[in-house]
Image 1 (cartoon, rainbow, N blue to C red):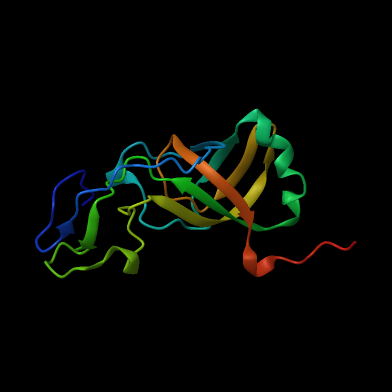
Image 2 (cartoon, rainbow, N blue to C red):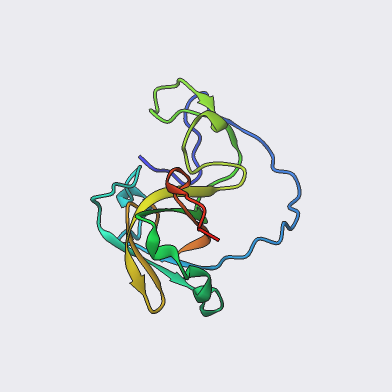
Length: 154
């Protein structure tokens, strides 16, 4: 079960250091069918529902050429995730692992990533399949699937 602030047996939280500004810019918003964390899938599926990636109008020209890729990597900010656990018990069984050994959304910098199928381009962004985040999730970046990258001819 997804939780907001409780600690499972044997999990370890730390006091967070003072925040510093990295200059991160959210470039858009992700629209999905999921509005509550318990309803959100744990992993995206390429046969999942069509979701929308709405870019800020400033960034729409940055999509030029993206249609040549079948899959893209979507990076997003898990804005509802806690950030203070260094050991977690994903199965709630008292056994823990380090945060960096898990794909949990609970991380010092809660950046999520999904490899999605590109359905198409829209006037405001993209339609994709394979996301696993809440409606309204801030968008950090988009990249072509690194396994399919081929340099463009000169």
